[in-house]
Image: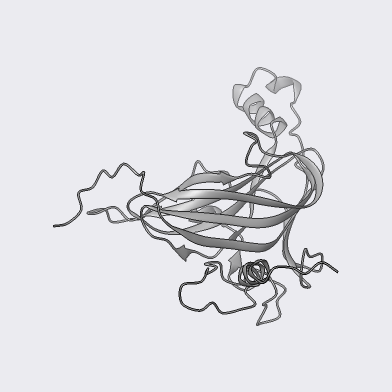
Length: 242
């Protein structure tokens, strides 16, 4: 049997959260990355969650329909993954007397373009300004119209009362592709290298699902976020203190 190099075993173990790294070794910033920990037994993986509309700006697409969220026994490795299962949206019925009502047609067009939902998210993790971060995870899907996996950055601007939250970069199933995947597929590695700009103090990963016309299912396992070090090519808008 061909022997697996020790370095490969170490990286995989760190991304799964199996080993505690020594000083100078790669550290996975995601809590409960293998989705195996559920201390209270509620079938919701610890340190993972589902977004609420009240947590986001009013013009963001969040939730909007019956959905299941929690721990799944379908896993890439170990015994569990995290799962989102959403119901297919129902099209609004346009009555004859409303056929010239723009608002009714606008609602119908919104649903015909697909229903957006944020399936689940990691807990926030700390990041450093002007650093590169490598994000990797395994994803499985059924009947997904479009999937966006986004790095969400929290900006802490000086002299501003509230943090500013923005998504900065998508993960892709193939870094050579410019589009996001649709349909049904077995476990695939999705990844990205993300450059964190100034004023960002923390980040998280969110899974955005566009589902239409069939009920969509999405699974994630073995999430890994690692600091690749300073990125020297940033254009710094803020002067460094003397």
